[in-house]
Length: 65
Image (cartoon, rainbow, N blue to C red; front, side, top):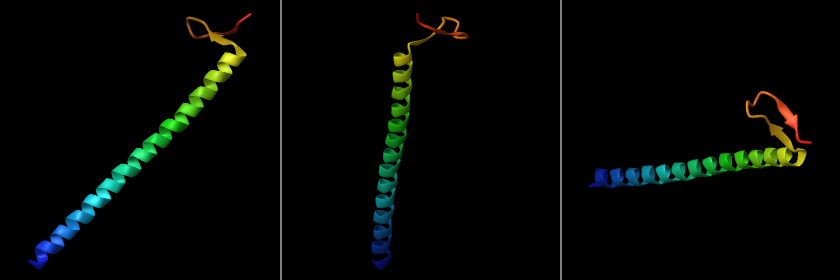
């Protein structure tokens, strides 16, 4: 009886740690997406404000006149 109780306690602890690791992974992924989004928005804002256009062949950068 005592060993069954110990096994149940260990299983509950493992389930709690699995839940916490999943929760932390979601927080980490959300943080990475947030940082990437900030970077992309800043670059888009710079391109729009500087009116930088890329030609169709994407080899030559030109300024809009």
